[in-house]
Amino acid sequence: MDRRDELALNLAETRERITASCLEAGRNVDDVTLIVVTKTWPASDTEILFELGATDVGENRDQDARIKHDELGHLALTWHAIGQIQTNKAKSIAQWADVVHAVDRSELVVSLAKASASREFPLKALVQVNLDPSPSEGRGGCLPVDALRIAREIDQADGLEIAGVMGVAPLNGDAERAFSALQSISREVISQFPQASWISAGMSDDFHIALKFGATHLRIGSSILGHRSFKG
Ligand SMILES: *Cc1c(COP(=O)(O)O)cnc(C)c1O
Image 1: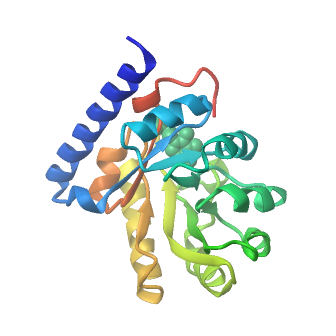
Image 2: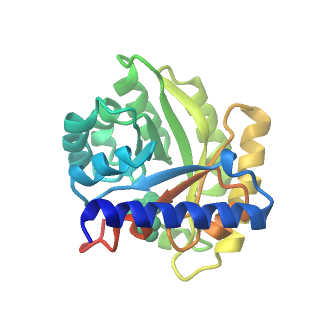
């Protein structure tokens, strides 16, 4: 099977599974955005996915993303920076990303705001919350108690727009508990910032659970592109 056929099949299957999970969760599939996580795969895959109707792509390494965006930035795609961000990468990320998912500290808000000053449109930002019960084990993210404060800092920063919250379920942990906690935090954030309605949650293996807890943006890579040969 050539790559286009493979991606077409996987994308169609994933969409069917999303639709079925939405039905089961009593959610409207139109309220859910699929972000295809193209990290580690070549720009040619991103281009094929666009032709197959993908609207949103996720990348986690600044350097790779920048190269792909240089080549494909003219396509009508929304580019999501989904991974943890080193402060010194903010400037570069603000040049290719439309949305950053992993804003988890004040220092990063300041750097992203500075980097976004010259943008035509504000950079949408999500507060990443650490959902691991023992936070030192977590994959980035602020403590739940700090989420509202960081949301406020984003809201007050020029060049940034608070769009919602993001979380990753703990490895080998309880995804239901994690996504339920994220949904509660989202409600708090929305009560202060009604426009911040996005919940970025759910990956290939757990999106069906995230959908039960209000996920609006799913970040799905391996189900569509295949297993990455190295950790992205
Ligand atoms: C890689 C990655 C994903 C996609 O994971 P899959 O298991 O391949 O679907 C989602 N979110 C983040 C933050 C990632 O780094």
